[in-house]
Picture 1 (cartoon, rainbow, N blue to C red):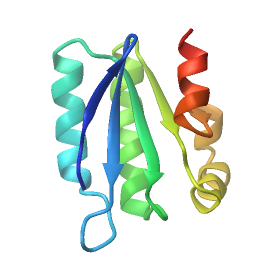
Picture 2: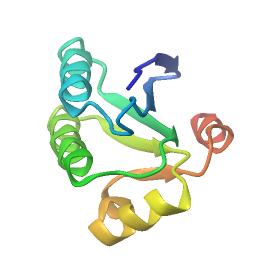
Picture 3: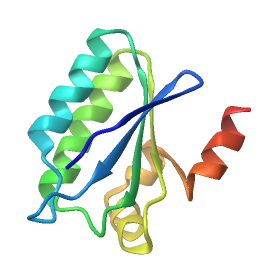
Length: 112
């Protein structure tokens, strides 16, 4: 996984990519988000457009992250999930908790 911080408005967007095993490194991800929240960055987005699917451990990491961001008064968003990931978000109820944008252009329009 590669994490690239892109500051947009009051959001920090983490651009997630699969590693060689086609998974997200959930330990690195939780550590990065904890570091951001500790530095008062509480509006955090995740660009999922480079991912093919999510594993249960990824969902567990996102649940931990959502709680951390929510408890700090922030907002968590997803950008660009494919249809497989959208199906998973709907089945697990994440779409009710986390605002999701189909692409970065839609997200940027939301920030205006």
